[in-house]
Length: 173
Image (cartoon, rainbow, N blue to C red; front, side, top):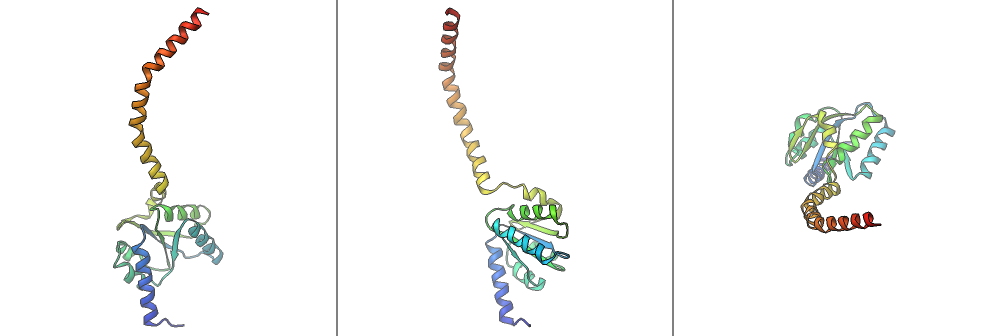
């Protein structure tokens, strides 16, 4: 079945829109994966809110040229599957890291985050990026630390007096 020009244009515009709404992208060679492996990978990615797409490399290059992921153009050679994370920058990397623990057939070719290309050996670093909720929790704890310390400092003289009175009480009884 041949693909018409309008269908190709729709594919390119769909991929351009998907890449435009994404924070990070990963290109991986899926040579050697079975259909059931690919189905498991897609299910895991869907559960993590990661979009998985396979396009012809020429169409993918054309679509990514207009986006922040144009740095991946040179890596689109051979059978490539693209992972796009819209919510968390490390979500796609976590999916691939977990999948490669049980299946070594998939090989990461390149990654990009905010238009910056990363080498495949930085998958673990990208996967260790905190999720949005984790990052907010860390930020809030850092913002609350000075206030907590101030309250403890202001409360310490009273606590010392209570401990001293308790020590005197224990000594007299």
